[in-house]
Image 1 (tube, helix red, strand yellow):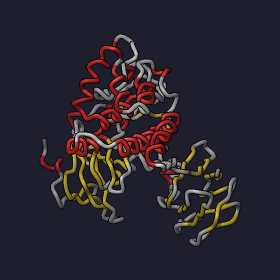
Image 2 (cartoon, rainbow, N blue to C red):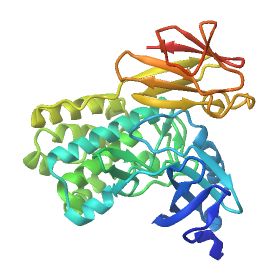
Image 3 (cartoon, rainbow, N blue to C red):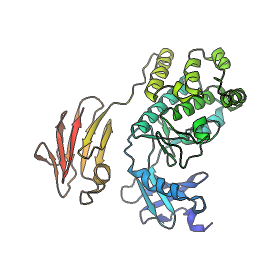
Image 4 (spheres, rainbow, N blue to C red):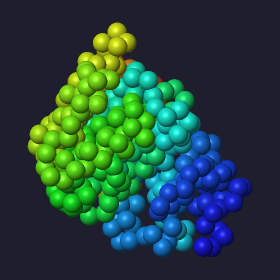
Length: 369
């Protein structure tokens, strides 16, 4: 292994990212904590081992930043570069992995376990909207941010829904049988993984392994795994877990929305509080692409709207959404300008309404609230 691969502290990658530290090491890559010299933001750079690269993996690395995927519960790379090694650049999340937390505490209380599962269900909703499955939901790939939100990380080995897996091998015991047996994947594949992670959060790995001995025999023989042990401790959650881990994908929850709703009912009974799904509005592009915008402020440019139109500036306009009904837009000083309903928008905020038409260069988008 070349020494420059590890990019020692203080070195600069791609003439832009100053390396601060190594924060993680996986089977195919290391993850570096870096600072973006242009924006001053902290970034995570995932640097891949050459000997682990395959053509399918290279294609996934290059395609991840182009995924039409926006969620507060998924950490997606927004850029890749090649400097002798393939690298993915993504937002840096301050927090701990769920694996580190479970290693330290063994298990979680019911409230925190349910909240984490709710976050994962919302992550899978976003993945399915993009017609992909993570296929590798496990504690190592879940980070709990400092504000308590669980986020799915390391989605590079994603697979397309309704196709057999091309790249992902999955990780036992979290991988579903259809993934391990290389059969067609569905929107239900990740639901199985969420249920196993939920069991580990509730019972700890030692007790989960005891359950899995029985489950594995049942699943391999196409028999529904017994959840009697879960019923004794968590009678309200046993039906949810049972419906998620059935060996027959078509008998699981039809989508992560259904799983979310049942988890939410259990969570509300415990806490008296509802964990609301994040509200969004959508920009519908003329080419059929949809951009789902969550609460907060976001800057959009050519990579988000239309990668073919390279003359559109990287940071063209800014959208602000209050999570309810107020949406505003302003131009970011772009060369070609931002136009709403035929009138040019300057750097002052302008409110948007349902069916408004936004145009940048020759690209049009319709607002859908």
